[in-house]
Image (cartoon, rainbow, N blue to C red; front, side):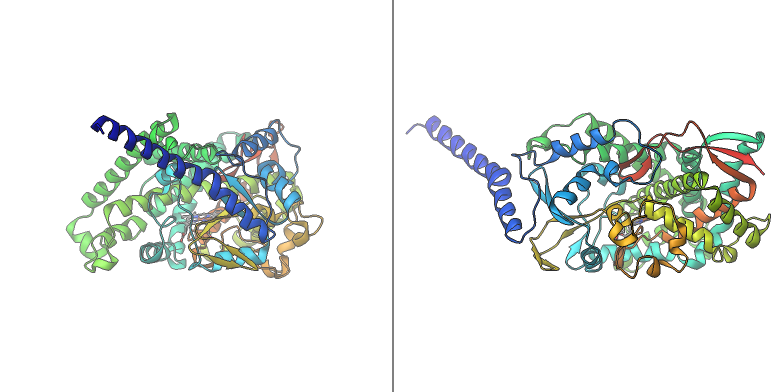
Length: 512
Ligand code: HEM
C-alpha cells in the first residue's frame, strides 16, 4: 500500500469522524433531549436542524416591533413575543431551541425562587463572546472563591454607610443635569438621554473618582457592545464554522474591547500616580471602589489578592451595570409620572414635606414612602433587567422535574411581573397603591413574584445605590418641575439586554 493511499484513507477517516461528531451534536443529541423533556411532560416548539428555533424567534421579534404600540403597559407580548406565544401554547414551563441547544423557560414563581436560591445546583450562564467583552471574567461571570472575593469587595464599597457618603456627589450630578434646563421655563427633553449622562456621571464620580466626560467614549462603546450582544443573541450559529470566521460585529467588538482595556489601564495608572506616599499611608489608594480594588491588588495575603485584569473586569462591569439599568428605571418612572398627574402630585407633596426646597439627604430618603411605592410599581411594569438566567451545574431536581447538567434556564421576570394570576386583572395598570403595605402584601406572599433585582446570594449588589440615585434625581426634579408627556413621545419598549424605550422618553418640563 502506498503512503499516498494511507494518507488519503486517514483523511477520509478523519472527515467521517468529524461528520459523526457534528451529526451527533446537531441531530442525535437534540432528538434525545427532546425525547427526555417530553417524557417528563415538558413541551416546546420542535427542533429544526442546526437553526433550532432562532429563525422563528427573530421573525416573531421583528414582527412584534413593526410599528409603535398604543400607550399602555401591556408590554410582554411586544418585547418577548416568543416567550409570550410559547407560554400560551405550552404552559408556564417549556423549552425551546437556541441553535442545537435546548433552553428551559420557567415562569412558575416557586420554581424561579428555587433556582435563584440554590447556587450549588444553578450557576450563572457563560457569557457569550460579545457579553464577555462587557463584563470580562468579573463578578457577574465568576463563581466559587473568586466570586466570594469580588462580591465582598463590592459589598463593602456599596455598603449603607458608604452610600450615605455618596449622596452629595449624587446631588451634584443631578444639579449638573438640570443646569442647562434653567434657561427656559418650559422645555422639551428626551429625559432618557439626560438620565443616561447623569447616571454615568454618578457611577464615575462615586466609584471611580472620575467623570462622565473623561469616560464618555467608553460609556458609548459599552452601550454599543450591549446592542451587538442583543442582536446576536438568537442568530443561527453553525457549530465550529461560526468560530472560525470573524464577521463585522466580531471585528468591531474586538476593537472596542482593546480601547476599553487601554482606557482602564490609564485610569489605574493615573490613580496610582495621584496617590502620594503620605496619602497612601493614610487612605491606601482612596476610599472609593477603585481604591478598594487597588488595595486588594496589593493585599499581602495571596488568597485575597486580585490581579490587574480582575480590576479592569470589575471597572467594565460597574461602568456598564452601574448606569444602564438605573437610567432606564428613571426613564420609565418619568414616563409613568408624566402620564399620571395625580401620582406625580402625591410624590411632589411628599418630597416637599420631607425636604422642603432643600436638596435630599440620606436620612430623608428612607422616609419617602410614596416615592418607594412608585419606584416599585415602575420596576414591576418595566423591569430594567427583564430576564434572569442560570444554568444547571449538575443533574438537578427542580420541582418534579429532572434537568440535565449544563441546561440554560431562562426566567423572564417580566412575565411574572405582568401575570394576572399574581397581580389581578389590572396587572397592566400603573397602580403604586399595590405596594402601600410593602412587597410581601403586594405579592400576596408569592415568592419571586417581584424580583427586579434578582433573589438569593446573587442579588444585585447595586440595589441600594440604584434606588438612592433614582430617589435623589426624582426628588430634585419634582421640587422644580411638573412633567407632562410630549406629543412627540413614541411608545416603543424594546428588550436589548435591558428593557429600553426605543425612541427615548420625550417629556415637557414646566418650571414651578
Ligand atoms: C434599577 C437598577 C438595577 C436593576 C434593576 C438591577 C438588576 C440586577 C439583576 C436582576 C441582577 C441579577 C441578579 C441575579 O442574578 O439573581 C443584577 C446583578 C448585578 N448588579 Fe444590578 N441592577 C441595577 C443597578 C445596578 C447598579 C447601579 C450596579 C452597580 C453599582 C449594579 C451592579 C450589579 C452587579 C455587579 C451584579 C452581579 C452581582 C453578582 O453576581 O454577585 N446593578 N442586577
